[in-house]
Image (cartoon, rainbow, N blue to C red; front, side, top):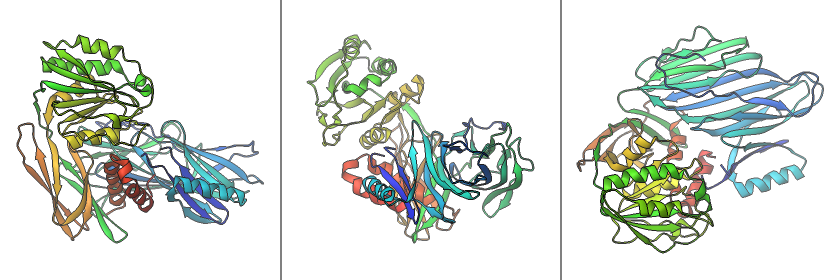
Length: 531
């Protein structure tokens, strides 16, 4: 998110700030990464190590979406106050949904404020001799939290909340909880609720026995309580769920309004498309462009021009300004002249994507960029033809690149995550996509992506009535416009996920035009505690 926020929780002797620039193998389960548990590092030598007195893990899974709370209590057996740093890496796809720390025996939740205000408050707190707690992001998706004071022969409680979208493969999703918090946990408590699955989830860990989900209300629940827990060589609890064949909807009432999320199965039909005869190629030639994987970019272009066979390519390089257009011919799929020109590109200067001006004669645009514009205030121009944005670097503004592609009827292609075959398929075919969301009983409808991902599309909204039907109007490769209806009931499958998930989808939608929407992004961040 371009809008940077801080989370502030202050009372008495404590204030916390977050500033972001920001195993048991179960049969047929999708691959999941190891989730390393938070680790408390004490900055000074101690006579006796700080102990993990208790850990309470609370999980909620609705379809593919999970929310996890890690509630930890640390005991300091030493006769002096200590300061520590809680270090915890998050996996790809996970995000901080909030945190809290006890202040004089009472748990205080962080609340969001603007980054500038957060920095000012933090400095005032320090000047007032109040002990702050600082949560910050380090390299990658790694975080560290300053924990102070840890009272002499007393306890300190820290609560972390994490949201994530689970990976679905072969109809199954894997949900994993960390267990390896130290050599020994005084008391371990686990409470996991799961809904929106086709059957009973399966749980496994070599460190725990009797892991059986019980049916409860509209889902399943697993509870574990164990004293003197030792994870040993089993650092995680693995849970596998089976995807529901139909739509999965869930709701949440937040500040008097009912939010919903719907995860809808949608088969992606793909048909070969015709490449037009006049194509515009926007090539980001700024300094950051040198980091892109040009080999993968050239391979994708090779597939594209082989499909084109014969045509005209109008090349425009973008740095702090746009260079003069160069015209190249493609004959029988041969684009060697253009390839040589691109290979000779010198990457330097700032990035001003707003300098791009579309031409009326161009029938389709390809944009190769990381999407990180750092010069000029002019927004990227809207085009009246499909634009395909391509990223070949991990550090990219995928939200922006996705936005400008989708609004044009094109597609975002991420070469850092997709294979060469998948990338070429996405570029060279016309796929089923959602073109419109509508409903008489719901408002503020948002869509994660118009294209099915993993055979499903994710959407959300706010209910105006007790129940509503949301209509998805589709476009297929064959030009047809069928529709798909999804029924949502206000009290159906209620939990704690829908409001925050809706807010994340709405912010992602707004971020495509950040300068225009920054005030609304700020309001959403403050209201829903988004980092």
